[in-house]
Image 1 (cartoon, one colour):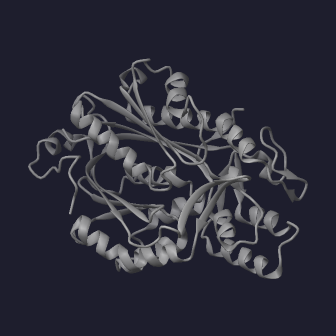
Image 2 (image 1 turned 60 degrees about the horizontal axis):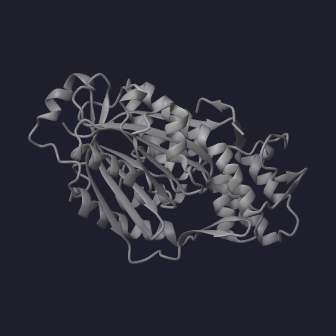
Image 3 (image 1 turned 90 degrees about the horizontal axis):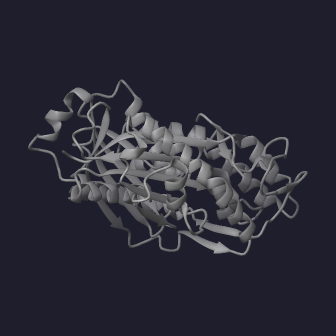
Length: 393
């Protein structure tokens, strides 16, 4: 049987921010010149985001909360990278665990069945890491095998799913728990740099998890078959999307050239990986920003509704880096209007500029057995041409 996503779970921090709140806070900072304020207003207005979540209760309208202090009244403070990373160590594990529990419940899989854990994050580092703590916090077996993908960026959910699919191919009885948590807001800063302003206008916090298995014993749930994966590296963009550790947090470089590169190259990538758009029924595209979705839509000549799932997650949650794509797939998996057999092209973009792609097929429970033996199933390893209070997302 082909490796499949059996269930997806999500979790977000309790503090929800509106775009207006964040924009007004940043606009009130001293030292911003008139040009920076114009860029700030334009970036926030163009983001196509209504709300985002953060582990920093201090960023909320009341400016109060436990944990890392990032503001003094209207003044945005500049904590050290160490202080920000300490908050990641405190706040990320509960989000990893909450999303993972949600995913296991959605899949109808017991925690005792989990054989492997793959965790993902690029917004903080520590050891023993999120993989170890997830095993501890969920009470998983001490024999569970663990891997962590760190600092891979926004595209990391696809390599994590690819790793899970390959594990199940070598061990057909494996049950892999993939979990991603990103606390992008930890690295917010006041800046007149246009790239930092754009980053502040889109990034947010959230966690998502997926249960992956090829074991035919798990037949009850609607699922997403993992049909194949591909990676493409652009000749451009090495310096246009970067993520580095600075003295006052991690620093994002996200130039205006990124969506232009995506727009120029996306048709060639899709032709190469999927054989064009004709064999694709639906699209799950990581919303690096509204402009990236616009460029994908125009570059592939898609219907304006084709990226609706991606745009909705962007609108309500912002860009949660690696976790975002799993939010989109969660919504697609739960949508009863999507038919059995729907072919979904998954695309995510990361530093490099790297494109990570996957081919997924939606399967209803009644058709799982037939799908597992169909001649046209593509093997998963093949390339196809302080604890926050959690609220429901």
